[in-house]
Image: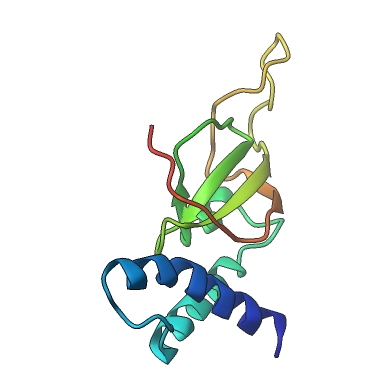
Length: 126
């Protein structure tokens, strides 16, 4: 079994299991649920270093919590529990102000330097 299928099955179980027991539903995810998780992960894995913030925002949306203009957590548009941490290279502006502090300014042209492996976590509301 390839890595994506294992990750998909694991993610489906982790996301779905708490809901199934709470609502008295079947304890095993069905094929449709597993396929949906695989499809979401596949779309998330299309985003790669070198792409822009604008490309990223076609698949993800911003997460609450602490962030800067060059480092932020994003959540899948399809499920807010699927997350990635992204680092950017600022385009068209300095990454730090004159005092050496990282700026909060973001630009759609910013280039992705690194993107974490997708992970599961509850939403941060602030």
